[in-house]
Length: 195
Image 1 (spheres, rainbow, N blue to C red):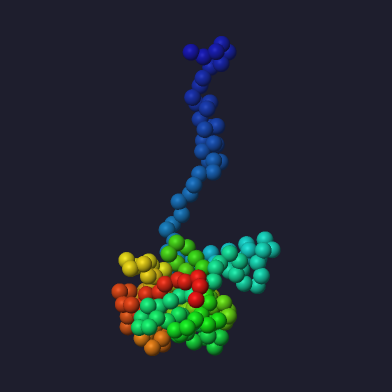
Image 2: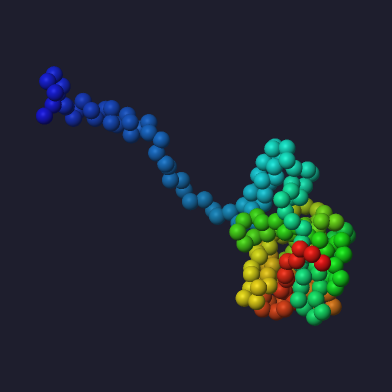
């Protein structure tokens, strides 16, 4: 039933309906793009984060300094060693913590972190050959998967080079990441806030 004087004619509504369909902002399915690797995507997120911090005026030249706590990474191998990043870029361990052992571990996303030496200002990275080193520039090699093991210790494996673990020898020297596994004590680290 229609009101007097109003006749409902479907053919008169059709042009308006088609115009609505053509001008509506419908989601368009694009061709599936090639998947971007995690390292590039995370580096892009890190750059956006740094830009946002700098634009807000809260940051210094290194935005991760704000809100990230300093800590030591204690490796339980042998007598126990603290990971250190020296100003020259070498990485190793010392039993008694010093100023080069203080690190800032910052999250890039859930389960993925970056590590930076407080004194040296260098990022911890791992190359394809499995050796860790300190670098001034943050790259894909500086991303680590952080995994809490059953024994409550943490392992750090390279995101860019799967299967390579951060590890120290029983003398506190750096071990190749491809010669160790996640269940070995040389790859087990415990974050500590005090020496």
